[in-house]
Image 1 (cartoon, each protein chain N blue to C red):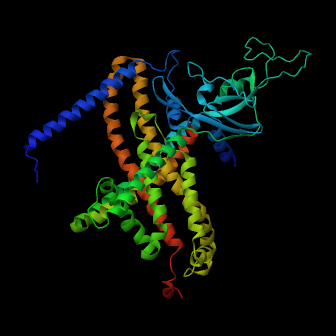
Image 2 (cartoon, each protein chain N blue to C red):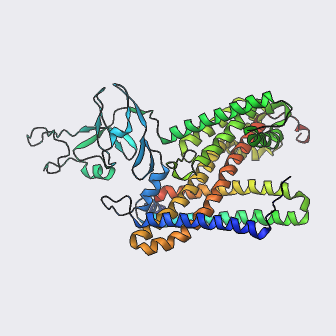
Length: 84
Length: 407
């Protein structure tokens, strides 16, 4: 309970919340990097296995990357809301 | 058939020359403008955050750069009637906001950070028996109104207060103007293309049809058909095509440099309307299998149903909300990155000219790279929105054909 009130105070009142928001945005970037990197790695593996399906794989890879980036950008939006 | 008869080194050299000239021109112009603080007749220190937010959000005028500004009509619906006037009445020669009293309804308006408010002269209640002070902007008054600190924080001139009567703002703001402009362009292009296409039935495509037919067929064959099936595609294809081209062309408009910086699909209100339309169409055109799958999913163990049903019900709202936020966040993030690097140049340019030039080189190269990414993102976000919309429509209207494995 104490910890929660401290967090709430930090999040709404102090100046530290902007720094924490920046850290949060950085974590979101890490998440996006790991996710999209995974997608790219598996897509490249499959393209190496079967070069004739490169076109299909490329399109699906880009769609999946856009969806994963969307999730990372939710976190960025929240951090921006705190900062500004 | 003409073949490129330039030997590879020659044409590559031409391309390199063009690229170098373009980059050099960019750097020169940005370096020069960074070293001169163009916002500074009064030499305010540069607040990068404010600069970025100002360029992203909506406004009542289009600022083409320098002093070239196009004021847009302000249309307000108040208790006393409808006020229509040009936004130029709300600022003075230095583009600072001033109050404006409408001659038609007598209400005083003030453009407080691009939000129009009704303000009124502060009438000091006589506590010490003093008569009401009717002089506006009286800095030497010894009677301090209660919320003066709040006034200076939000920009209302001293001596005035915000009156919270009902005011509905129907103005043509920058986003509305850009959206109507793009819609008009889309209507013109597509009507013309449809007319020439129907006249040229069976023959090779000509003109604008050449450019747009691949995309229309792409949406029809790769997005709509797999998700909706042959029979229902024609019912939902107009909406899918409209959404795709609207989002794509509005994203592209935001990337054009000297046009005043439109940020149409980056505002939550516009993407919220798009997502709302998707939600309404999905739920209205859903058949009973859709609702059955949400409220009592077949083929799921009995106890898990109690966990799954709240999630499915929440996803009725969450799926369109996610569509909205994905589009807004991607476009906004792109604009913010480009603006942040521009303000980086300006920040360094304030410290010293040479620092401005130096940072200008790297920042400009990075910005060119970011613009390429933004072009890809513009198309990709439109495609992802359309794809997910088609999938939701397909989900909602799918036939009951896979029940054998469940019971």
